[in-house]
Length: 496
Picture 1 (tube, one colour):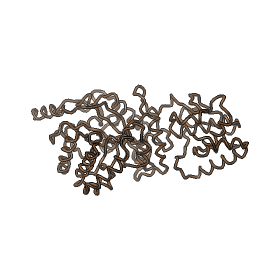
Picture 2 (cartoon, helix red, strand yellow):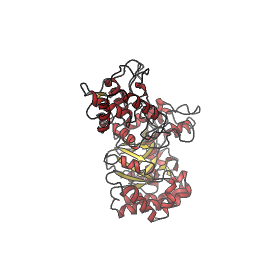
Picture 3 (tube, one colour):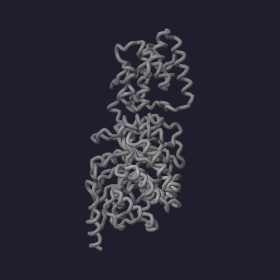
């Protein structure tokens, strides 16, 4: 037995990393008010998110991501898997429409063929590897196979006896699928995609797994989990599961396929029977996860080996079925406000939604008043800013002048577009500032209130059909009626 483990360890050491580990984000769309793709991209850019995974190949999203440099994983949805897995031509058409038509303007780097197929759609398991091969063949035909990887995200639940990691193995009933799949991944230089959810491992352990161990919190040596076969110490569920995947592949004689984590996270809210689905725990898990991935630590058995990871997920998805926790895995609300402020000091700029560097958009001192008025009218009209707080009797009516009103509209639009630098220009009459323009009861979007918490103000999406649009239109018409004819003309001729 000792010789066997030595051979396994020597073999598994062959896994190498070809680039530094990175953090990406999954983008789900089960929202009642899903932001327009341009707003999604604005948020990604503002948060310096350079890697995303889509659960489909939405055309509008792919167009919005063009020329951003953001690396994109697209997906073959489970409902399309049977058709693609049974027809090479169907796969070729899918690649032509969803990849060839967009690449290289949109930086597509991988195709996820299905999602957790073995555990959520087992009747399609028999065609899964064929679907992966057909997609890859279409990429070969387009000379893109060396640029775009093909794999499939799998649930960590297919790994049995996951602790100690050195004894882990795949559910043997899936070996007829897993062995040819791993052969494909190895021969094409792709990676093993794994979804890891320490939250569920903790919830289902009946107290065996400590909360701190699931959250990456520091543990005293006496509390660390020790693999008796390797004597390696584990301080968190995540690392142990990644190493379990490597050992499970080694038991099937695959030793050089890197692991990439395609989903992980922690819910910020749950039902009464989910007391540990809290804002604090979600913040702790994701903050610690990001730091651990970006410092290139690797896992205890594979120090320094990149474990690139995609957080589940960008937005809270309020229309997802199931318990409350299913709707609350997001880092942001639909309007772009952070669900919580990640604690990422010293971890670079990625997901730096920290209010200690809060910025606003204000009217420039000395700007031409006619230009300001034209820009204000645009923001409250085509710009889709809710300007009703500027109406008489509302909190931001005073001071009643174009500079103050324009600053409110400009800043709302700026935050609506996730603080993208080009969202604060308005033909040169606006600029970014760190001075909070809030005054009295007029609290601007993103402002810090007296208790130091971020004020959340909902900005409608570009495709919003809510009643807010009628309020905006009423303001534009009512306000513009008070202007001289020249101001109306300026609104017509200036494009933003």
